[in-house]
Image 1 (tube, helix red, strand yellow):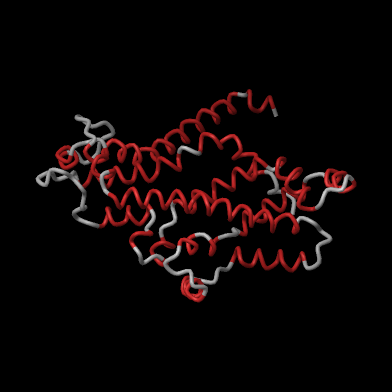
Image 2 (cartoon, rainbow, N blue to C red):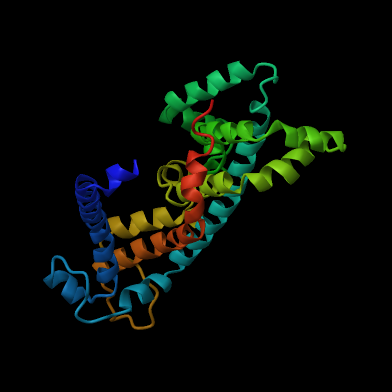
Length: 290
């Protein structure tokens, strides 16, 4: 294998891959860089220049207008709270389901796994889900953003497979010492499961943070809107109502849209560097054996 990668053909293949992936990565990054640059530009420059990465004149007027809006601060606080609580609840329920399903001796295990796979392939649909949320009394409640998607079948199967691959001798030794099932899960399995748990915790958090359809369907009270709903209002609206001492001041409309997109993206993006080391290991662990 080493001779293949040290050959001229191998080197050419590596260089081609690096160039191709670099171009693809740059193309994917350019729109976000344009949004960041536009958020610091003046309205006149945004009107004059169709595309740029670096503004001629830096301006914080867009961010000042966004942070001066009470609706934004409230929606940001709601989104942070819902994301934090929802991630903990969803990960806890997934782990509590994955642990017993990892035991081959569990009665009805194969039937439950078949139902989970069925749910992963087929969903109930928008209208049945809405009716279920309505009948449970969750409409206009933040729980409607958390509980309907409390368990992701794909995440459940991967975490189940990870638990299944851990040496059974660890659990047997703990139970001989008098540990209960809950104690084994908390003190032995969870510390060994940090890569996979960190990975899927981030997946759950990103999913809740970026969720747009659930608030749109289930929340009618604007005081409970999340950041994505505020972003929708800013993007759709022609004029944004902004609290400002100077009534003659007109904030940059296009710049506000860019600023809201940046503010809505950066907080969740900041978690990636801290959990990046767990991604490859967390995704691959448990994805081979069934």
